[in-house]
Amino acid sequence: MASRNARPLLGGIEAGGTKFVLAVGHSPQEIVARETIPTTTPDVTMATTAKWFSQHGPLVALGIASFGPVELDRASPRWGHITDTPKPGWAQTDVVGPLGRALACPVGFDTDVNGAALAENAFGAGAGDGSLAYITVGTGIGGGLVLDGRPVHGAGHPELGHMFVRRDGEDFDFPGICPFHGDCVEGLASGPAIKARWGKTLSELPADHPAHTYVAGYLAQLCHTTFATVAVDTIVLGGGVMQTPGLIERVRERTFAIGAEYLPGRSRQEVVAPGLGQDSGICGALILAERAFEGETD
Amino acid sequence: MASRNARPLLGGIEAGGTKFVLAVGHSPQEIVARETIPTTTPDVTMATTAKWFSQHGPLVALGIASFGPVELDRASPRWGHITDTPKPGWAQTDVVGPLGRALACPVGFDTDVNGAALAENAFGAGAGDGSLAYITVGTGIGGGLVLDGRPVHGAGHPELGHMFVRRDGEDFDFPGICPFHGDCVEGLASGPAIKARWGKTLSELPADHPAHTYVAGYLAQLCHTTFATVAVDTIVLGGGVMQTPGLIERVRERTFAIGAEYLPGRSRQEVVAPGLGQDSGICGALILAERAFEGETD
Image 1 (spheres, helix red, strand yellow):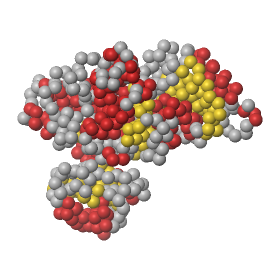
Image 2 (spheres, chains in turn yellow, cyan):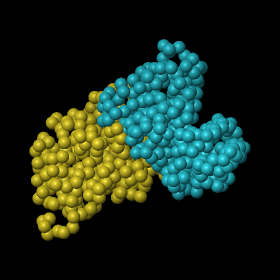
Image 3 (cartoon, chains in turn purple, blue):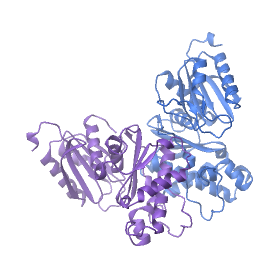
């Protein structure tokens, strides 16, 4: 196939804990083939990935938006590794090295949520805005940040789900399920936290169940603190839990209610669903590839 | 004086709610004259400021690190204004316009805490680091952020003191004093919050008073959430409350205890006192002047 097409091909991987989404495209929005494979062992998953790309290449660059935590410091010998993940077999796995060697092309690498934030900022719900946070609420709660068009790194990378929140009203009994922090936002409002507490998903609970208020309130604090910390224009809320009917409206209403109109720039800020639907992550991976192709290093 | 000196002079203003610190220097670290004047009405304070600089100039550029909230969007007609401050007489005050016209030079403008963060990142406790937060704990709690050498703006600017925190242990009685948010960090751990609650400053309370634990715990959550959100290398804690003996050690210990070694990059992160002592703000103002002189626009 590739031999019949003279236009350069970018490759993208949205590397998740349960599946890898693979795509090749002429640009981040022009995907010509895609595949989804299960995340099994690193050896098998990476070999399958490399094989698929070699069948759909050659690539001029590869972008990987990965589950974490990951090493993003290019000066570190561990750049491109997944580091201390609890996912069996994946801790300290070099993701970039084997794939870069197998496909013989430059590789861009970032967190899955920074990738999604790049995509939503470039083509999605925050297109044209200066800064954006992409927060996913699902098996865990994670967030990526793009400020002035650049993904935020630092000593590590954003881990927005692990901030603490003010407990809501009389809601003090549930200790939270985060093994590190107990009742951080992830420990209180992620999918598994909701299931552990009420035995059902949020969508399965009746509309008048207090779970809806609690979860929306904790996610609203996450949004408020994100606005208060980095003053982004847009917060995009994605992930499975956010599919719950009415949830994003509740979170939006609570965010601006608890912020009390205080924050400068409030009138320019919004809390919205992803503009790219399920494609934020893979589109972001292709943006990382495009940047690597252009020689940008973060 | 100026006529005897051929080297270009930068001017800096640390514009605070109680005083303006004015300085001229050949570089941010080479101050040749400084003055402190009380913050009275905008007209009087700005006229006194302009007169002092005209006596110590001419300036090639002026930098203003101001109390807020302020408008930092250069595309806005209100760029360079202090906006919705509760300080009597100062709401909607154009700070940049009159001074830029009076002194006939380019003006750099940012928040006081972004200025201090720039200075600590360039010359102080975080010199050489990629990213830094400067948090002041005093009459209010504010924070500025520098990522990859650039101050963080956005729809507005960071307002770190207004994030919410998990209430400590059995500490639920005090409602907090923030007129907007009640028990946000500023409402619980600023100087006035401590005074309102216990009738004394933290330094005046005995070493075994629970206030020390509560305040350190809330400030530790502020630090943890700042690390979790933007993954800075360094958090610098300044301001009057931080002069309390032992407080910074307590905050540091609690920050890393509640973070539970979870955050990626943890081993590279630190919580420290200002390296520039009381001069972070005025040094930052001079950096803003230097940037304006060099044509940088944020």
